[in-house]
Image 1 (cartoon, one colour):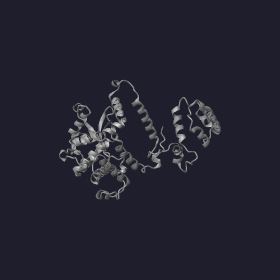
Image 2 (cartoon, one colour; image 1 turned 135 degrees about the vertical axis):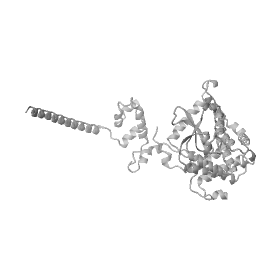
Image 3 (tube, one colour; image 1 turned 90 degrees about the horizontal axis):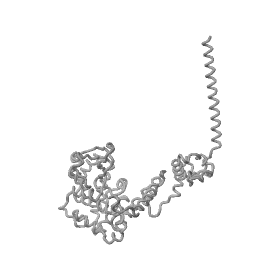
Image 4 (cartoon, one colour; image 1 turned 120 degrees about the vertical axis):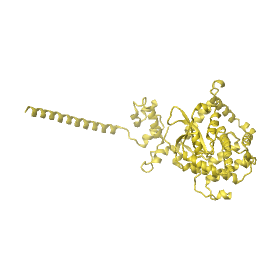
Length: 424
């Protein structure tokens, strides 16, 4: 009987606890509903109140219902509030998000950020780039410390900037420095001064990549090693294209322009690029002619096709192993010369291994090089040097590339690619 009595007492206590919990839960639910009823309604008017205000500003505390929810948070969550405010400022609340979510999310951004007449695109990244350029300009023109107190890279940047500002001097010098560079490399076939007897593929490739800092056939860079994160590694990856993306080379068209020297059957990007190459050759004093132009343009298209169709089978390879993959280059010699151009002793690096992002690309590149006429390879490599010198040449020369960039890029972006990037 005693045991039965104890069981009944425990059961009653449990029932009382359960009833108490239900009462408390009911009370909290009613309380929450009342809070929601008193809270702000996110209507178009509320969005407009928040849109162009900096919520953490002291004056915002009395600016309407919506800001009520931010009271007490501004000192702790300023960044979150600023981010939310930025996103809200891009929203067009007049649009039903279920009908057109993109226009709803980005509509106000369109209204407040127009593309200027001279540009072909504009985005948040463009705004950030412009802000960074302004900051960099201020740093370059400010007197700062004595020149000898600047680190070497800062001194070089300031000197280069001063040289680039001397537009009259650039005009006076003209293209002579570039012509002399090309003569030192054995000349260029379309200028009529190519000395074929001086052709040396490896040395010219080293000049292009090492001395003129241009990618050709592939790109060699340094990056923090993804595995050995406390050191940097040399990286070889696909590269050597002049146009800004693979898609500009891979449009559907025939090869009639290649055989006939005309634009018939070619896409708009190839037509614009061919005109640019032809204009540059003429500006340098060469004779126009589609043979050299097409050699360059269609060889780059072969590179683009190669790049688009290979896997990224990354491996870390020694220069000796690279010899087996791309034997047209003597890699131990090439890497030694390239490293020592930077004032670094090759021997001090020990057993140097290179991170190759696509071994398949190098294997297929080896076949492409072996099947390409020497004249085409030479014209392509020299063209990559000419392109690398563009920012430092006369205005009429730069104008060719600016005009070509506009012609190529202006029809290649959709609205979604151009505008709404919801980042700070």
